[in-house]
Length: 443
Ligand SMILES: Cc1cc2nc3c(=O)[nH]c(=O)nc-3n(C[C@H](O)[C@H](O)[C@H](O)COP(=O)(O)O)c2cc1C
Image (tube, rainbow, N blue to C red; front, side, top):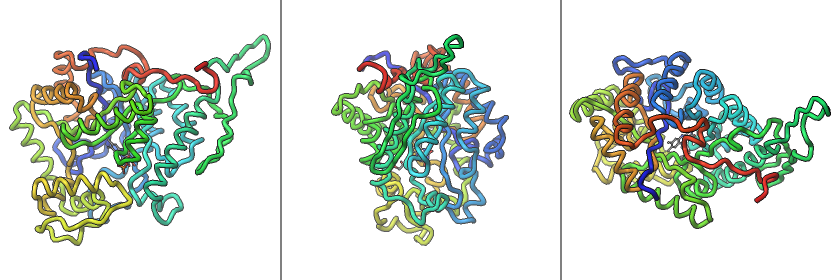
């Protein structure tokens, strides 16, 4: 690993913020979920700050919490990511555009088409966050009575990846001759029919779209369970993750990169970007006070619903002032469940205290001045806790402006972050190679 590594920065976008109290924070845009003008200004500011990517998460369900909590929540409703990112592609030039798409509730031909289209429309800026979808309520929106079992979801995801990337390779890069003289539009010798018949999927192909400008849109993976890490090591080029501290980050980083070495992949060809909640103040005390104010805007009903989602188990009947009881194993997020139990044990929190933490934002947080935050980010980079961060803004627009206009210049001044984009594609920003076409490029 060379010492001239720089940070990669993604924006982990929920348009109002991931923090459930954010829509009531002074100066916020409570309607940002469905206000394209706001989203456009966020993307353009992030591009001016030279961010690697704008990442739009997706959750496929609304009714995953009691109505009393739902009525307080801005986090479950937002635009469909492809529609939004296609629109943002036309008002930005450089920033990467990453969308979540589920391998459990979608079809590979659809996913391959949408990402190939987004990559063409944006001229090489698309990325696919592969998720198996942890939210069990999504199943009810797709004709299922209950969620698909965790292991089965990941087996399907692995096969799904092979099919989608195979479909992107349907045509050689130079297959479309468009030769007016000879009248040949496309060379059939440069078209491959996938004819995939596997355990979970059956897809003939070829894709009806030319090979994407990046060869394949950038592959992102966000699950951290055992099968999630293995899927990442085998397929991912970016990992979104949620370690709680530097020790956790280093352990995950070392684990995924060593899994890559074990299967002969170059560890530099995968960038690990933990989600980081960043609150900037003129002083550390001021930044902390902003967070306390923000947390105070969270309602207990929403807080207990967030805790239930994180646990994969209904916590509404627990004694708020007692300690967390034993929680059974879950078919939702195993990582989420384990993290809550650990936090409760480590800090001796009551159910109420735990709920308030989860109701706001419970993950890794950098709360301080631009100097203290830059110091922490530099430490994560140099200690191989990460290759950068997927920044969670506490409230928008101010929290985003604080990062883009105050923190980023400090990171640039220290040589920790690019002063300008060196290339035009998301692969260029991330320093990732363009994949060869498995059917047409010589090995
Ligand atoms: C930064 C980050 C972003 C994520 N974004 C999404 C998302 O948009 N949609 C989704 O269904 N799950 C999302 N997840 C959840 C993971 O994809 C995964 O479902 C979850 O971690 C459970 O998988 P596991 O059991 O392998 O840990 C995200 C996770 C992280 C850490």
